[in-house]
Length: 91
Image (cartoon, rainbow, N blue to C red; front, side, top):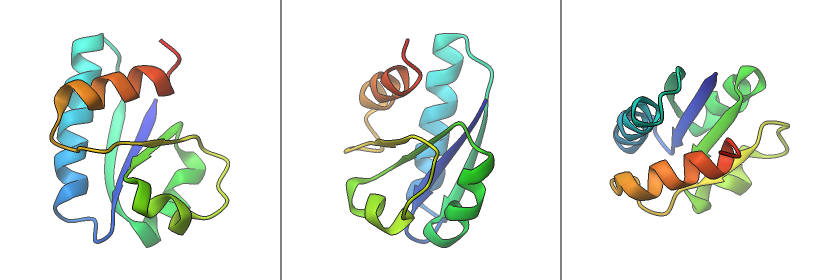
C-alpha cells in the first residue's frame, strides 16, 4: 500500500503527517509505504498511490486525480489521522 502525505511545500507539515500516518499504520498492523510530497509532485505521485492524505485547502489544487483523497484537519492529532486512515481504507 502506498500513501502520499501532501502539504504545500513538501517540507514540514507533510513530513509530520507522514510520521503520524506511519504510526497509525503500525498501530493498525498494516504495512505501507508513506511518502511526503509537495503539491506539485503529489499530482504525479498520486497516480501510483492507493491513498492521498492532505488538508482541505489543497484538495482543489490536486486537481482531478483517480486516487482517493482523505482530508485531515489536524496533522498533529494522532487519533484523527488514524481515524481518517481507517475511513479511507474502509476498516
